[in-house]
Length: 104
Image (tube, rainbow, N blue to C red; front, side, top):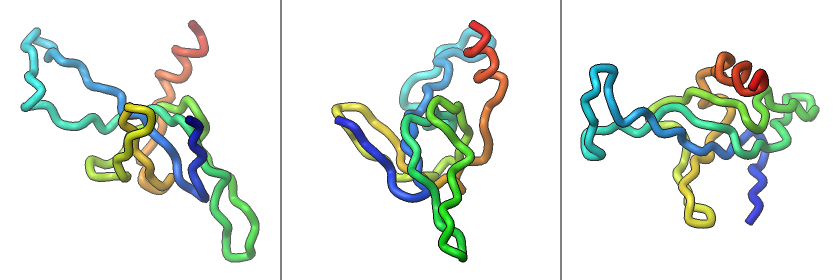
């Protein structure tokens, strides 16, 4: 199934955090918080400004992002969990990961 977000919305797949601490302690599922990091899977065309011009999004597919703990709406597509959120819910893009991926 393909999914295309509308306006300034994006589709995000959460990236799971490490299951161990730096000291080697394994964190059980019940104690874990939902990750606040994700990968952009799909982006909408953008939002319209006051003059009616389409303003494209700054995010692109493949960006690794940070978002707020309660951001977005959880959905399930083809048996996989995703979040739909507005671009304004994103706090930032993790650039180091993107550079490391393209160098590899």
